[in-house]
Length: 325
Ligand code: APR
Image (cartoon, rainbow, N blue to C red; front, side):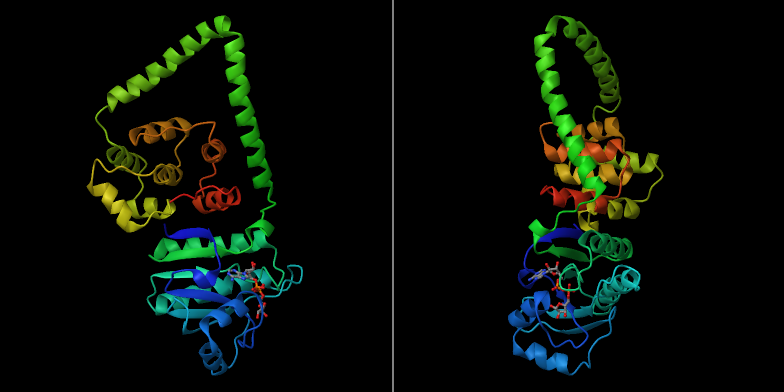
């Protein structure tokens, strides 16, 4: 999965490099800066002293010393002053310049903290959107695994309207699911005939669809959909947050059995509607269920035609659900 949002202490993350949210002196202090210096040991400070500081938005690289990471990329985020002091551009540059160093040093993986969202006071949801936007653009052109490390999950609830509307959607579906079942049980004679007609119709459509492609595997259906939608493989797996190696496995093995989250990642990438989603899931042996919060959240995004996998992963993470890809 090229971009993973994880909850951890960044000094414990296995990556070629970890990014430090430093200050212009590069001489360490508190927060993630303090944690990295403490874990890396005194030799880090010695090397930092030779760098001559760092401007906000810039990035410099040192060795990782006692850390598991080979390198530490130090970048200095903007101090939040209300949003009219070039904060967005400076924070964007922090991620861009750090990723330039990842490319220059040919690193395969890197872990970022949420720069500027601690002492420097940058609103977490704004900062997260900037991080995800820069990282997802970078991933369209580069094969690197990137971890976005959220440290204080509890303090980090996205208070976006998206979060509350998904919450409402979950509640509605969950109630609907249970009240419908109760209602159907109570009025089974009346509803029964209607439901039978409806189910026969649904079965006919599905039966016809299934009969048309009865011997089509998940992999064959995926490749057929990519062809029918005129998309190219690279664009599809990048937008699915799936790495190249996994995609070529699926492409070369017609009986490949993907995970449910991988199937749904391709659903998002191909912008399928709910019926197409159910068909593709069925090919891999899965279904959507209203007793699963994860499934209801996915259904919310499909119903609302929101197909940005990084935005979806952000919300899944907030609901403590597995992310896609
Ligand atoms: N691992 C991952 N993330 C962490 C860790 C950790 N061990 N410790 C803190 N964080 C998170 C914070 O919760 C916050 O979301 O990193 C994010 C950035 O917070 P800060 O470390 O305070 O960095 P920042 O807001 O950019 O302020 C930089 O703080 O530590 C000083 O020297 C640093 O002066 C600089 C300023």
